[in-house]
Amino acid sequence: MSTLYLLSDMNPTWLPLKTLLSPDSYMPHGHCYLWQTPLVSLHVISDVLIAIAYFSIPAMLVYFVRQRQGIPFSRVFLLFGAFISLCGLGHLLEVWTLWHPAYWVSGVEQALTALVSCYTALQLVELLPQFLALRSPQELEEMNRALQQEIVDRQRAEQILQGILSGTASTTGANFFPALAQNLAASLNVRHVLVSEVINIQPPHMQLLAAWVDGQLGQLVCYPLAGSACEAVVNTAGARYYPEQVQAMFPQAEGLASLKAESYLGVPLLDGQGQVLGVLSVIHDRPLDNPEVAQTVIALFAARAATELQRLRAEQIIRSAVEELEQRVQERTADLVQANAQLAQEIQERMTVESVLQATLEREQEARAQ
Image (tube, rainbow, N blue to C red):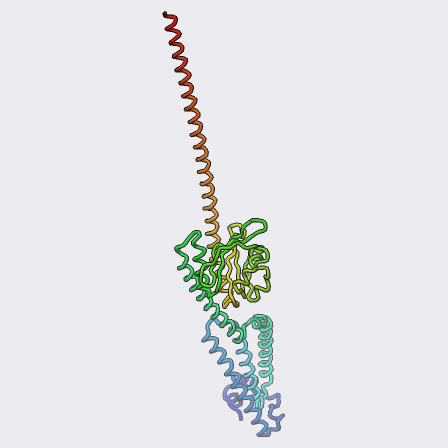
């Protein structure tokens, strides 16, 4: 006789529990297996092992959620834990119903499992876009490598900026452009750096303000804008990078051939209204090692070069105005000197005439007196 039957005989309060867990109106599930010991043992062992596995999985899920505070989708972990726990309980009831036909309890447990599983499935449907948006380990590894490369590039850019700043901090005006070209070439490890100014004549030309060519300052020549690599930079007021075969792209630019150019990077010098004042160019005999860093650095110093160029133009305008004013003052002074000389001559002539008249008048008076 089972324990429930013994308890029910000893205490009437156990009768509802006995009726629920071990009713007499149904046949135990073991009769379906003809109470064959191997078959019953197979089902018992399988259900018990499955139940143990089902109970261990939610325990690990709960432990994982408690250890990782703030983990996303923690609610889904808990729902999975509840669902798997109910599945494990269902397998234990399968073992129980072999001897005790508690099919109502088993049915209620399955219905509860169905509700929890359906609710979990609905939650998964809602969260599926977020799951799909999660990065895979390969993507995270690639992002990590990209971030590390970005950190390296940023450190490299900071070193370049520091080197250029230390070389150009004490220079201003016309001396700034050769210093900038030299320090840019050294910091970016390129052969040629050119600083050009747009000359608004017809047709437009570019006048070199500084040229660092193969480790030394080059001649400040003037060359046509049309057909040069700088033309697209000036026309679009934006940076241009040609990583290779730049000579073939601009066959009219004879200077590129003399420089043995393979790559070209140009950044415009812009004023406050976005008008192009000139171009800061980097020319090399092979593709640049890190064009993104180079463009960032050049863009920063292009703004400084544009400021210096505007200051030079302003100083030239002021100098021209002062020279014109001095010329006008000199001309006015010369006019005043000439006018004073004429006035002095007129005064002298008037004094001579007056003295002659006075002498004549005196002679007439003397003649009358006699």
